[in-house]
Image (cartoon, rainbow, N blue to C red; front, side, top):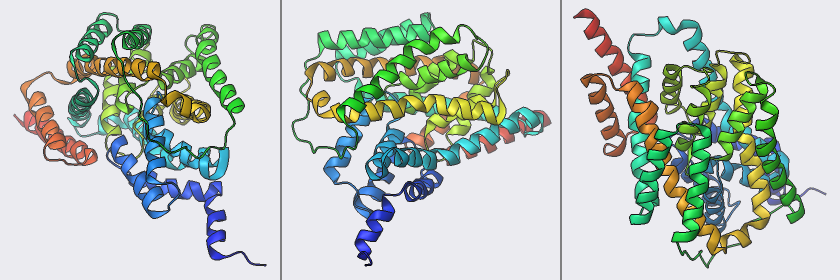
Length: 409
């Protein structure tokens, strides 16, 4: 007996391959950063496909913004999980992440093999446009997350501390201290109205996933000490960065910079050029990790290094989504959780503000022309509302022209 057409389409939509194809199309076309990605997801899965109600989707976004890691990618993982189980979660992430990861690895290999063949001024302009992108992120996050004297003070203190002690340990310490201050200073009430999320994971399984997340976070640094310049150290650095990023993809910048530049794995120039290029590709900003892995001065590098770093930075997202979904109802009702998160959110704005100064500003702005290009890139992003990829490409063209004029002179 043939199933009705509606039943057949529902079964088809529950297969990981179908989930992969849907997210692959989104990964090829979703420009604009995490906020835009969430808009694309709502249009696709709430309005068009009706996989979720508006209320359930809003609650799913709230959960993923609560967790550390890239919110838009985590929403995609959770949607894939709800449709086709663990295979669906992997398919959703692969489809959404693959296009930008491949593009950035190819860009990294191109810089390493033909850097001198690039037009003069292009790499420098990518570093300059990173100033505008990070400044826009700092401004937007400060407006939404740093309301009130206490939050602004936490933000400023976090900035100063991280600039004084620029290490991954200092950044983790700032986040922990901010959570403690949030518990002491803020009295917040969680939202009362919500809709239970579709869950395919039991509480027992969720607890095991969270335990694995914490176990890797604690054990990887110890194991990596036996191979400080090898693959394990690389996995540890990128796993830790993916585990501790609150507030969106741009906040991964200071954590990754502290991990790969002082160690000599990636030069500061390549780091900033890749970060600028990451604004010109669709999909999640966390795929910047693939560029860094492909750009490593030590093995592994190239395609293997890009894949290792990409997987390592995203593994915490999978573990946290799988682990937190069964406990979300309890978490969102906790006043203490909300208060601690308010302190953490203010601190991560401070981390990003510190990164805006060092290394982004100090490595990119050396002359009046650099400042002017950064200023107009910022205006194009914030006031002209141009898409980031167009601003990146335009800045590259302007940088090449300025270099040509300077060379002719």
